[in-house]
Structures are given as structure tokens and as C-alpha cells.
Length: 112
Length: 113
Image (cartoon, rainbow over all chains, first blue to last red):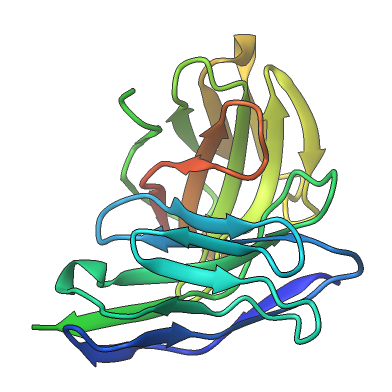
């Protein structure tokens, strides 16, 4: 079935370091891809999305590019801040489906 | 916009008891979803409502689980005869008409002893 695989965490970085969180997917068709973020004590919220191959989603300095050839949607940020500490979830949504399929999440800890 | 509200935040119960959770979506969001999340895993889809109609149920939702959304407003999720395997975070989300951008509540943490 359709699925999402994320790199295991936690990922620990110093402030201003470069961030990459890997995400790959398996799907029978061409899904839309998402990154959701969960800050401590809060609900998940949409960070960015891409709906077709080669699209780049971006928000708050984060970027991810939909790569059909490698079935990947890696999350990147050039310079992380302490406030970016959170759990990041990669997810996919198949056409005409109601359900998001999430990866297991990657915890990011940014130290001052 | 006060966000998606879930109650209670925590519920501890004994095996075999029934529990009910409530979700109040963002007003005027016609779509409402329930997900379940266990430790170290991502959320798993349970069920989906469009207005008051329950349009999809996951196979994860055994016959001990029932969800309602009367009048298309708040929703309840009931688990009958709870089992230890039901221990998880139950998440509610709503959206205004798309399946892409969901607004999640903070969840109800269920512990079955």
C-alpha cells in the first residue's frame, strides 16, 4: 500500500546549521506531498506542500522539492533557529482520497 | 478562529470501560477527521465526516469504535470495552473544504490500565 518513510530522529543541530530531513514515499499513483510540523504542546500544522512533480513547496525558510524520479520530498532549511525545534511529519495524499498518510515523524532539536 | 478543541486532554480508564471524546472543529469547517497516533508513529486515519455524513471509516476502526457528528458541528468518538491496545493519542482535525490543509487539535491522550 501507499506509505511514507522518514529518517529517524532525533536530529540535533546547533543554531544556524543547515537542516535536511529525508522523506521518501511509495504510492500507486501521483500523490500530493506535505510536511506538517508539531511544536511542543500544539496540534499538527501544515508547513508546506507540493502537488506535482518538480514543484517546490516553501514556507518560513523551509523548502522541499517533489522528486518523482527518486520518490522523495526532503525538507531543507539553510539556517535553523531554536524556535524550529519540533516534530516534523512527511505525508502524502492520493487523488480523490480523504486520508493523509503520515510518516513516523522526525524530532528536531536546535541548541543555542 | 479559536482552533480545533478536544476534550478531555487526558483520559485514564480501566480495561473494559467505555470512553467518549469530544471534538469541536473550527466553526464553518465542513470536514472533520479523526486520527490515532501511538508513541513514535505518525497519525493514522480513523474516519472522516463531511458535514454530518460519515463518508469513510478505516479498517482500524473496529466495531467497538463509533463516531458521530450530529448536525455537522462537534463530533464524538466513543470506544466501548476498551483494551490496552487502544492506548494512544486521538487527534481530531477539521478543514474548510479541502483534504490538504487540515487543522489539528492538541489531541486526547487515552491510557487504558
